[in-house]
Length: 262
Image 1 (cartoon, rainbow, N blue to C red):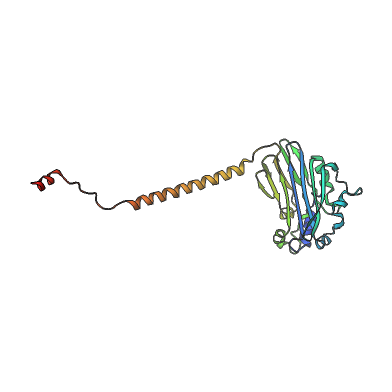
Image 2: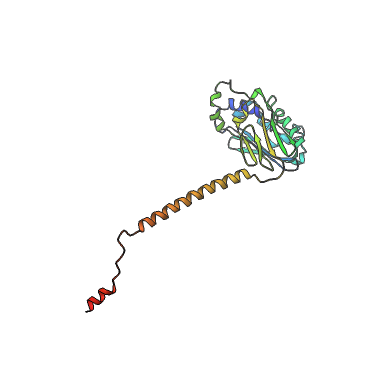
């Protein structure tokens, strides 16, 4: 499976300058019983494929399911591969359900290298007590700081559909890159275009990610306080406006009535 594509992504970012040429989305969902379900979409325009040395004829469902296709170390019954077409972009959508950690790691070690030799940086996942630990090793080939035009990487990255997502049974413990929210970490292209090791830890047992929930509860509480304070101010203002500044009426006395009757 093509989960190991950091170097390929680096070449894409340098060679492909037109928006919408590449789509790479990898969604990895872990369960509490040491299995992973992965959904992967890889698609390129013919021009982009030529730039990075990928033969689109090898990036088809037929090619990847042929008897002589690359062996990813996965039980074929767990894998579904179909062609993916989106505008000018062509590629594949691969869904692998219930992979063991060994199968996941074996697939990552094979990765893009079998389809485009020389490309790819493997990732691994391991169980460490009550956590899953995903590691993308350090690789100087991902360092684009010295590449001409590297200052525009952010702008180019925004024009390429790229995301690697990891969702764990429980909350994310820590991550050295990407965006963490509850049980999920999302790595963007810029996160991978550095030579540094990336380590993500997530709880391996089912649990509620209370962090985001409490955050929203806190925001809701603040909103309620603001609304209550505003309502109190409006109520007090209405009371003040309704007050009458005239003196109270004078009650008639009995003596006056008798004088008038005499």
